[in-house]
Image 1 (cartoon, rainbow, N blue to C red):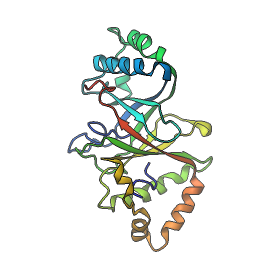
Image 2: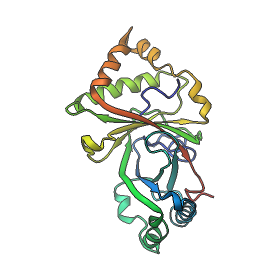
Image 3: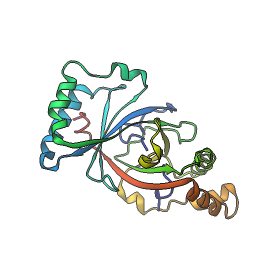
Image 4: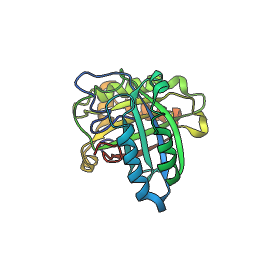
Length: 251
């Protein structure tokens, strides 16, 4: 099925990562945190989060907020709050005054059970497909944990994967991201890919990665690739995210 084979996080849908304009920006980075709602206070959280982002994070630039609702996988029901694209230097001047921190602490935090996975993800522009101006209300993400002692083999596998996807004319959105801080074996979430989808129906289409891989790398080469992936990647899982413009402060 399309998008179901080795699609590695964090490209924006809609007016986000996938829609940076005709000129590919290359390596860009986003801050990301996962918000776990207190379900008894969910309506209040949504209203307050939308208001906070509209007031402090609605304009284009490094402090723009992007909010996604996780629709599938182990984090279903959680909210992903992202900011960017940015650099680490931008963080020195991030919104903190004019009531920003107080508003977050008073109107958002009390309605959460907890906050998880404060991370920074950087896109690999060389391995990713060029970004386009197309809009995608859904994104398909695959996270990968790298097995102990296997990090030295990752680059070669990703280069083969990238070359294969670039050879597939029907694939128009795919980006590879790297977690910028050491996560350890227990936490994982080392690398991720993102593919944009216009609708759920796209999942019914054939993906065709295996055939494209064999065509590019040789007959039955896919068997060796799968074997290597099983040795190098200790765990992987998929998530579908849905972009919410209102929660992002855009409505």
